[in-house]
Length: 281
Image (tube, rainbow, N blue to C red; front, side):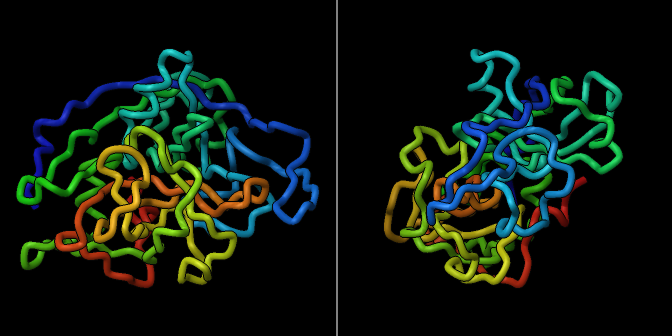
């Protein structure tokens, strides 16, 4: 598949490991139950890409390490330029020099999500500085100019199993998500700097028994070319599941879009498993 990867700009953005965040000492579920559970941020030791996106005693659980911009004025490039699959380097603390990989973005709280190996997690501290080698925004498919690609490292893009056949791009996904199941996040001005959410608290509503963090899904009849989640019949967006279901706000996992185009070109093919955890370097 021909791309313009040799013309993409590789640029650094810097941030730091984010603290755990809670808006209240407890969360109230959509059924009115009170729970004292982890919510956002911090270093999550036992929830990782490849694990279930459902069933955790947590709210908006972000797998691995949550990283935030150091200053308010740095948030836009920090949330926009990194792509899933980009290399991350720890620049301070006991884990200095260790390397990880971007696995998602979480809008609203403005966190970039990063996978590190277990031995690195044990050395990391909240506040440790990290550098992300941002690369991928601006990626184009030279033979399919109407398909927009975003938020994915070119190396990872080439590994996820897309097959070009008869002028179409066949993309392996674990589920096709109906347009009406997409919600929170719709209307944001750019799909390159945020996620939006599947409004389903049971993975069976999405057509799978166990949707997992890192799974690749197709969002039907949604156009993410300019802004998040515009309903458009015959358009398809391909996304990656980045955070868990949310008990307090009543929605399911968050999805970061990596491709959007017409169904005449993008062909999602449901397979048993299509997850980025298989390709993390």
